Amino acid sequence: MLDEKGKNLGSEEFAAILGRWRDDGMRECRFVIGAADGHSDDERASADLLLSFGKATWPHLLARAMLMEQLFRATAILAGHPYHRAG
Image (cartoon, rainbow, N blue to C red; front, top):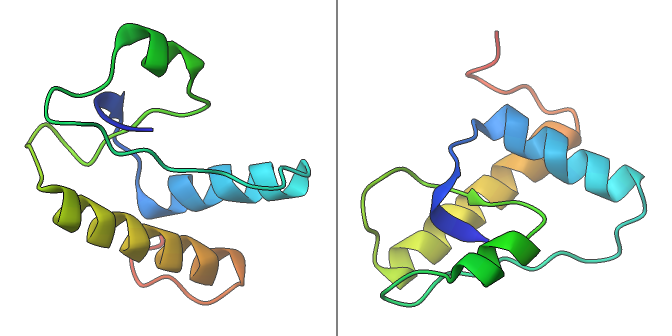
């Protein structure tokens, strides 16, 4: 769940979480972007991961593009491609 109160993860940390989920047999994951007022406390409590793209407010289309970029980057990292920010 994308949420301003979530963890601000680097690309390698995000990839590691997705890799663990994959290796543990998680069949699917869904990413939820909140409405204008964000998520309720109950919704946050039900999430497996609260992910933040920082304290700033992002338009939904930009948040989706940023998420897609991070998913692409995580896939590349998990496939063993060199990550230019590693180290």
